[in-house]
Image 1 (cartoon, helix red, strand yellow):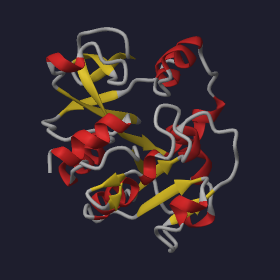
Image 2 (cartoon, one colour):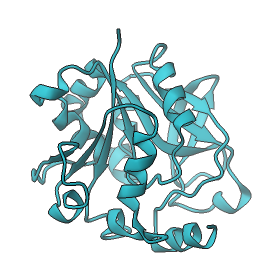
Image 3 (cartoon, helix red, strand yellow):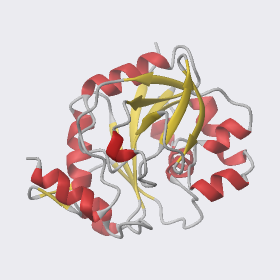
Length: 225
């Protein structure tokens, strides 16, 4: 039987929003809201961080502290965690970005399900007119249930959501893949997979939540409650 776990990479020094995991969302640190939403799915959930300020919120075995500074992105941090002894029991992993306080159990369950068809999968939702020119909002071009390309600058496609599924084999190979010019230019880790020839499955979902990319997004989340 396939066993899944959720990994939440949480780096303190976000480029666009330093200290983002600890930003206040209605009196609760954002990373705690993401963790609680993931735990509600019933899957084992782990915080992966390089900062004691984030780890101290949890104070339990669900936190993996890794001070290695060489990780280029959250996927590399996830890949660095799966060789720990007690992580060997999991066959696949769901990477929920630490800026997704509104992630739902349905989104997690569908991502797990789609790993039956793809070694890597992610989600998208309808792109709203006000998001088309926002470079903080990642867009994805799709064909059927496959992602063709991700980018920040184009103004069409679907809105990409910060949840991924990986088979153990796919995630374990990620750090061995070459970093590409496109990945560096766009700041999008998933482009490394595409440029290396991997297929990325994609599922569409209804999503009315807020992803926290900037301080203004945190204000928007608080104002919507």
